[in-house]
Length: 170
Image (cartoon, rainbow, N blue to C red; front, side):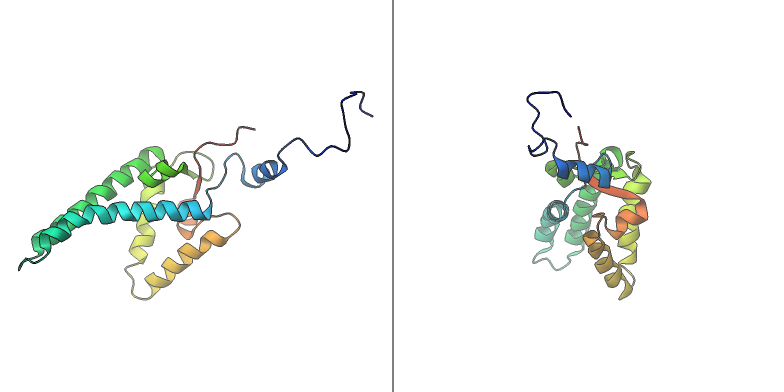
């Protein structure tokens, strides 16, 4: 029996039980939602698209569009290089930083170039070049996010997870 006169055994719990349950389920980090991850991917893709526009404008109406195609490739590669650098050093692409997400390894340690870029992005990208099978792998990669752990196939390959940037502070 509790001796505290203010104690009410019938009062609702004072702890956020959903937060505690998520912490028990996921550890010290809150996984990023599917919608937030989708929005981040969309923003990062739009940034690459924006980098390609100057080259597309240059090649429009020109008899020899090679220069424009080269400018498009250089623009896309510059954005990708910045993104890969940011992911390797902070675990965040431009969109992930904007949306408050971070990529970490499953043990909570930060990603590096191998786990954050090569295993997480390039492997799936390379698989995409395989006729028919690449499309299937792309679909499976995206469908994996509907599993209980919110991790895509590329996260499983790299041993990573996308989490909210600030860990639990309970």
